[in-house]
Image 1 (cartoon, rainbow, N blue to C red):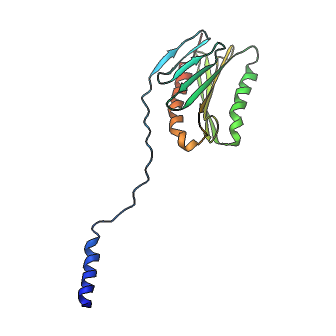
Image 2 (image 1 turned 180 degrees about the vertical axis):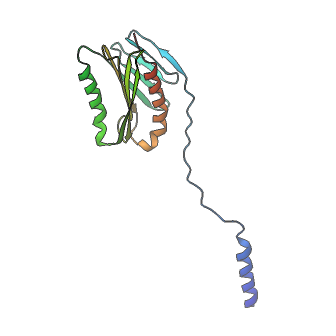
Image 3 (image 1 turned 180 degrees about the horizontal axis):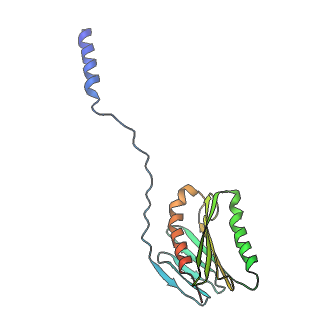
Length: 183
């Protein structure tokens, strides 16, 4: 009887496990955004640029603008300043607002952009970490105009969760700077 039980247990052990079971890999959320399409934005302000057709653009009387992404719950706030012999002061103020994020930021990097023919001299700032605004830019013609912008989300900053949306809108901000033209 013991032999039959032993043979039965060995048979079950040999034939019960046909293939190895492996743990399932972690799943990640795959966000897909529409391909970018752009339209030229013109107004009575001394600048034009191209913005995504998936965003709502509103320009105020003082030439400040909002580019809203309702599906991403994000807005690019754009500030226009006319230069009156105070270019350095304006640029320092804009840079100060960027570097106030140093306390919570993991990394702050900048990407310069210069188009001598269009007289657009700009810098795009990437701010990694749980900060209020992860992408900012400033642009000037170095004589009369300064345009600055910052990306804000309508949520508590959680960098890991919003990175895909940041990267998507960052491309639109780069396009804005590349197509910026002074009147």
